[in-house]
Length: 293
Image (cartoon, rainbow, N blue to C red; front, top):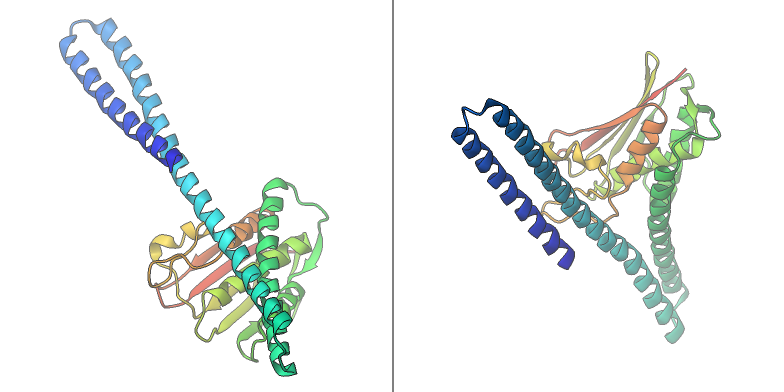
């Protein structure tokens, strides 16, 4: 809180100084119209001061936003770690103190396994964000069949969420889509997009995944029937720590790293990722484009 108040103080100070410098500059010009040489020098001098103050103000605004994002990220990660740990502890204490029948025991174990998977998912996402940020060059590049990577990601998602047949519809071309890159990273990006579609489609998710080749580009379309994305948010969702809000205006649980990781990986592979939506409540479509052979 003190850090934020300090940043706001310097922000207001920068704005006031900028306004004062502009006023002094205009006044000085009006009083010294005959002194051309001094006028030019003064204009340059005050322009430099104003530029410095404006840059200082912009820097402070960015710092305030960055600090708020960091605080939101820490709160989100703390929640994502604390909740499954508390749940696992509660079920373990119940199993230790009470005799439960086999059916109930299996239910408890399933819940604990799900909480453990959620916990590991959060840790892995933070680690992936760190690795993506540190590694600037692609390592262990090879030719990869994108069809196989997507099919494997769909299989893992079906197994993890125990989805019914038809929840995810996959359409792949008859011929392999070959791209050059790191298989593990591409699989992470695709898995994050599919998980994102699941997370933001809480009421009976229906996901459609389509692969196709367009010239020298491999395209992956991942469409869901979820909460959709407001027009103002469609470009911001790929920023680090950014989380889309639900109908009540509250950010949906998560670390805000998933889509940022996707964009970082796709950019490293020479591609691009974008999002389309007709509005809130009307689902969304994510499109990943990669150069292919």
